[in-house]
Image 1 (cartoon, rainbow, N blue to C red):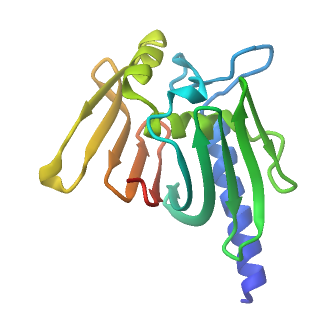
Image 2 (image 1 turned 120 degrees about the horizontal axis):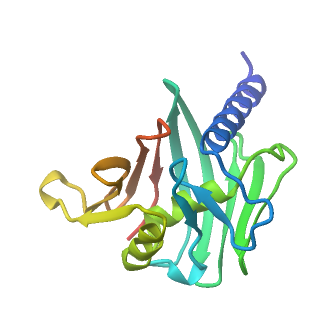
Image 3 (image 1 turned 90 degrees about the horizontal axis):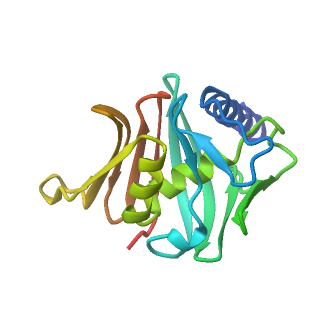
Length: 199
């Protein structure tokens, strides 16, 4: 099979994964002034201001995702600081798949390949759970009935772990090292790993 056909197939599969995650997460932003997502069917997480980022970044990231027993790979350029966030996604051939941004309380995605049903708020929310100030995250999660646990586990080679829980039930787990962030959503059944120079 040609590289072009492989690229088209991977792009279609990746879009399908994003749509399933978005729909399965039961998002609804119609009529809301503040962008939000549902981390569980009842836990409404309101996005934190971009000023809540722990450390600004302007870097390439390699992303591998796993959903429904399948693995997917793509690239991104991420620029995020206290003023906003821009994420440009690329396919394996280097062609842009879309530009996602979060600024001034607005989340939007500009793309000719992403369908209108895709909720970009979920991508922003996952990014925040990985990279935003844990103090601010604890406040935002507490407001929607969830809790955040953080700890350093240097003996396992990880710099830290973040766990989002509903009561005693683990919903999301994030493992961090100097060049890798592994995000696992146990409730929705998907995992992705980000590779980059995070230090």
